[in-house]
Length: 243
Length: 132
Image (cartoon, rainbow over all chains, first blue to last red; front, side, top):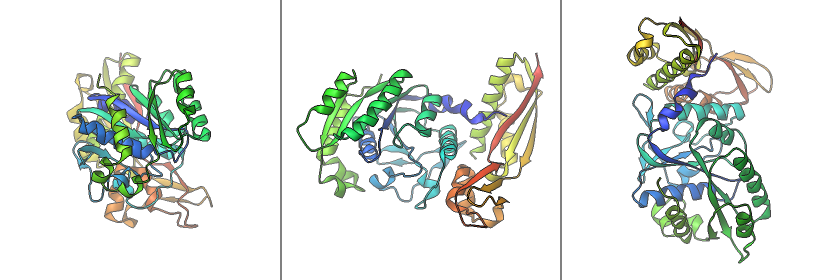
């Protein structure tokens, strides 16, 4: 028995310039905010951008972008709706406000299903908001999306950084490209994370100070774009070129 | 109409198998269609007919429906999916992503959403026959 879906994923992604997975070793480091704001920042630079929330059990980018009534269009597959200039895909179109209690194999199946039926069309960038850690979604992406590249987010905490170090080591051993590391929610002048990232020969992309105004900007793209956080993420976007 | 997307996947997977096995012509493709995904077989058949390349000129696509069976991981109760017991929006959501069943369906015995889809999830390629 063969699962035919995996055989069509390359075809679905062939018109996408770069596929950037925003990931981390631990949860709670601001990955979804970085992914959403990065997608918006790339779009602002004139690129055609998709955003795909792959955190199926705890999706949150729809809250950041205030996605309410939108639905994908059915056309020989599904075509994501355009939200704030982004082609936006999330499990919430189907699960709504309800919980999606999924085990690992179910997560894999949802990921494969959505990658095989979603028609993104021509995009410069597809930004993926990943679930934290090294589990099913990360392993499936490495297996199925050959052109995947990772952008890792950490806080200044050694707890977050140590999990990032493991993830970065795994990606390196599998020869999966790593764009660089963003240090988020920085509250001191410490250069410890930057030094450790550079010691690993990984590009340190940006440090983002803790932004107390960020929480009130969630759900409003206008407010979000005016935050210090968004300004720093725009710097990250300027360092990611279309090849 | 995302049956088209799944038909493309069937054609791609079959072509890859034919290539690997050195088949010049494909004579028969057996497909298992799980009832949970509520595939419109007419649309799937039409899509397969329109998407097939020269290698598929005389191919018979044999489809077999497979009942969707669930097994509760908490109380081990087994039951089958009944489309009539879910509303239209839920049925449509499960059509696109069968695992969404975990959001809307509970074990009828103990109420848990922690169940296994034992069989009948979606489209599987069972076998490919051809001429070398």
